[in-house]
Image 1 (cartoon, rainbow, N blue to C red):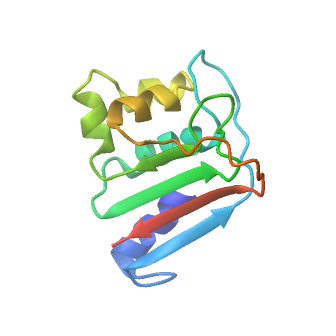
Image 2 (tube, helix red, strand yellow; image 1 turned 180 degrees about the horizontal axis):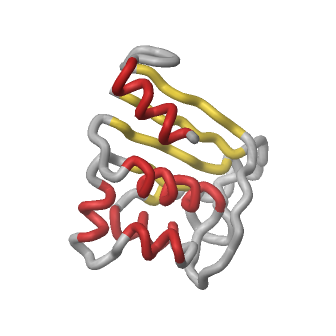
Amino acid sequence: VMAGIARQVRRHGQPAAAPCVLLSGGETTVTVRGGGRGGRNAEFLTALAVALDGAGDIWALAADTDGIDGSEDNAGALLAPDSIARAAAKGIDVKASLADNDGYGFFQAAGGLVTTGPTLTNVNDFRAILIL
């Protein structure tokens, strides 16, 4: 859904004209089918990467305010237009990562993990998608 909105902004200037930021919060759910690593935010961004398929001029951040995304050491991750290419250069396929619930491995390879350390403040998960 968020990828669809981001594409609608880029193509038609709706519901807002670029540049703009789409903000959302709340904890998403993940159906775990694979054996990979990562939490809800890395999963969200991995799915967003697949849906956007390297669309230029779209960046996204998803993180947990407590500094822990699931059970890993990262708060979340940053998706850049070249994240898929950077991970692929290290032999990591984004679709395989998503199928294995391995957002952590994908963003580790892409250089997009966001690590803050524990904040001891669990307000919410936070997502921002920047469309330039």
